Length: 130
Image (tube, rainbow, N blue to C red; front, side):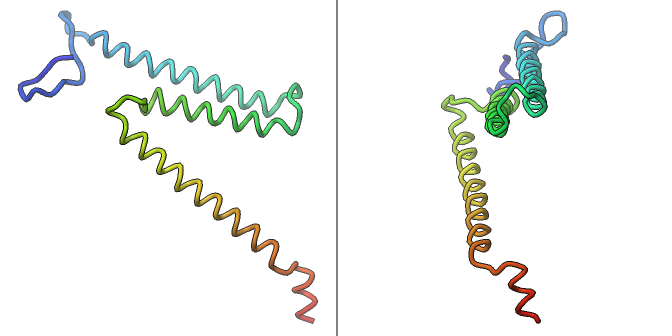
């Protein structure tokens, strides 16, 4: 990586022949690896959904596991989210986002379950209108 006049690092460095440096090809390599892993996990998800080798009630668990693994692949290889000290704010923002999404989903399910338990059925409503 080269340093410009302001002391900031430039994103790409060219070699003596005018091509991209090894850093650029290494960065491209991580994207290709991430794409390959994400594709394999997608194919595995379709295979899990269509196969008879996995016990029926275990299919949603397997799909959820593959989905979490694919989210991890995307976070690491494409969003470059690591536990390095300079990524602390990114990790905290992700954790806060997951907290908010969890609260919204959990709260919605709680409200729907409460409404389902406390509201009258359609048959009872129809009998009241007669």
